Length: 325
Image (cartoon, rainbow, N blue to C red):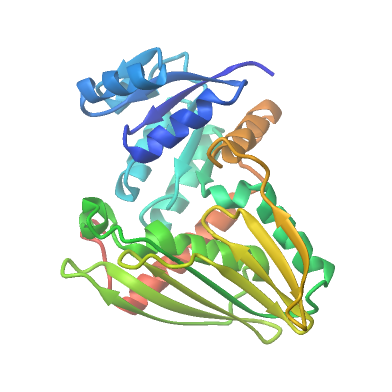
């Protein structure tokens, strides 16, 4: 496999985590960083060993040496930036939420298909080995038929400016709630019969905390909650008629316990040692590029669109509309 030169759009905390990841992967080179602030880009490049620093995103997208671009900016910017990359023939790993709404996601993925350029959503839990192990455990019947699922994710991050701003597609749903929806989807699938939800809003009008109940065929139900006010236990629990599975931290699963009907631990699985956890989505991109794929089987385009539509529906229930919509 060749060494892939990776560029990053955005120089914030998520970009730093990806830089640390790329430095630990043999098949990738920390090639270029782009920020609207050239000084910030140059400081980032020095710190993380990037050979190129750009003061505009356009410069990075047009660099002929770049093999893959990771987009690490707020949700509201993803559509335009990813489209620009695709226009320049650059494969894209776009941070979650993929776009601000389903309309943008559909248009972007159609454009990528027309241009025959690879793009995938960086919802890292979809690519992790332990996520696959959880699915196999459920399918094995070790807890019998799964009937209930609960998942929560919350951090005290109300001070983060972009989360408070509707024009940046702020709120808890697109930032942390998306993980609970993906967790439910990985276990119970995509056929949802009914959705009941509620949220608490910030003064700016975005969701601060939310609760979502999803009804699935086969008498199955998922209860999900997310918050940008509270630090929650981040657990995911899958309950069947012969036991239950406890997932420690649905945002980056580290340990999975299987308990029988007497609440005895009968199996325990731990995640392999990680660089940051981001490496698995990078490996998936490299696999796709090596094989000439336009999407990754770990997060198919159809599933990205479905989750975006689901979040649109939830925001519609809550009466939340972004200014640009």
